[in-house]
Image 1 (cartoon, helix red, strand yellow):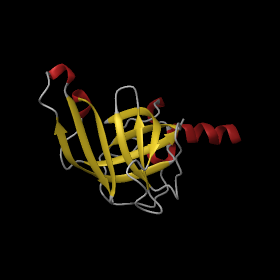
Image 2 (cartoon, one colour):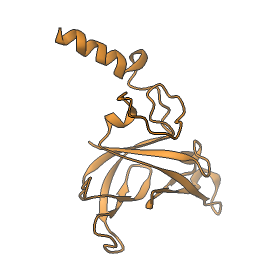
Image 3 (cartoon, helix red, strand yellow):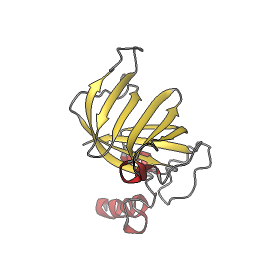
Length: 165
């Protein structure tokens, strides 16, 4: 009986046999390289510097809730909806008890992309882009290859999801 319940849960959890149908706007694995590079500003928030193979990121994290350490690896995803079927987010929280993409991650924030800055001084093959988002005052700066900004637009609402690997 337990296996039948688990099978039913798997059908609910992974629609159409896929992990999720949400389009990831961005998905990368980072390593924390520094904490509070400009000094500690707030008691409960740490600004982390992290690198992946192609990207550099500064991110404010509520470390009282989700502590992070130097050399720790984590997967970070940016999406426009938490709905597993990929339907757009309504902007309203529901207590329906349904599973969402957030259930697969340890730390989730909702915010807005407020600035996209492109480096146009170099040739287009090596051009860099910086994207800035605010998650209720916790900030993110993501820098990397120009192509990494292809899925983003100014004032776009985003969910940032993190899990340690």
